[in-house]
Image 1 (tube, rainbow, N blue to C red):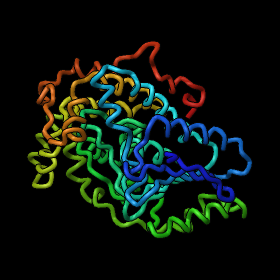
Image 2: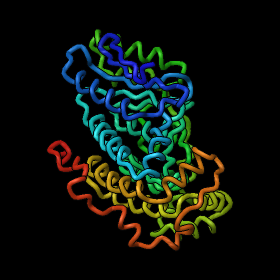
Image 3: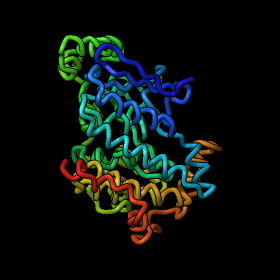
Image 4: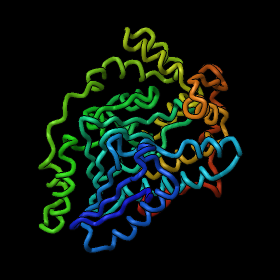
Length: 355
């Protein structure tokens, strides 16, 4: 079975992630296929817009191939680094793509799924959308440009989403800047057809999508911004947890949820988002994420987190260190150390420097 279905419908190039049993989780081969197709379509005069969607009814994409990363982390391999390098380059490619790139973010959109959708020009969510960056739960840190996106959400909502791994609704995603339009899921097929016809008729893709869009429901996350902003404005993970613990029932419940995550990943994520907020481009954030991901691959928490959540599924990870207070500043800084000749280097490119 082909993992990425490629089709041309009128003026629309359609990319369908086609691993529905795995909620279309990305493999290295899928990343390469999408990259190659986008390269070809950029100079194809037939193609006026690109659409990415997921096969099945469970979601666009549940992330990357976690089991492969687990095997790599345990064996000391480098395959994950090669995968991340090509995946992050694809994320930047989507962000800069010269033709309208439309993403149907229906159902689950997690981790790598965010990377192939939320950097697009026209991002469509539905009543079924559930977006998340769940990395800290497996001893990892938000990547695929997630630190760039979440650091630019209103107030501290992005940091809350990163540290809790909470799933955002379509309305939440629009409020946080991860999506643009709300379209009921039963209208997506008609929207795709209209995008294909629009290529022949001369209608701009943005106008076509806007014609199908409806007002999004109220964002539940936005309604909680008061206590979220007050608690997460603290300078350290420890202080955030203290404020949450004293912030009322909902905040206290959130503190317990965060307390189950990798202490190292929590602290590195906090620093990553705070630094990403000051970075000028997505490419610069992806470069930073590549340094962090490289360090995570050799951190004990990544293999242990995947073991507990995905492999053995005992939901009882043994983090090392076990408490945020035991994660020193020096350890956190090590995750951001330059990689020398192994740097990703996206922020040094001409198109990255002039965003």
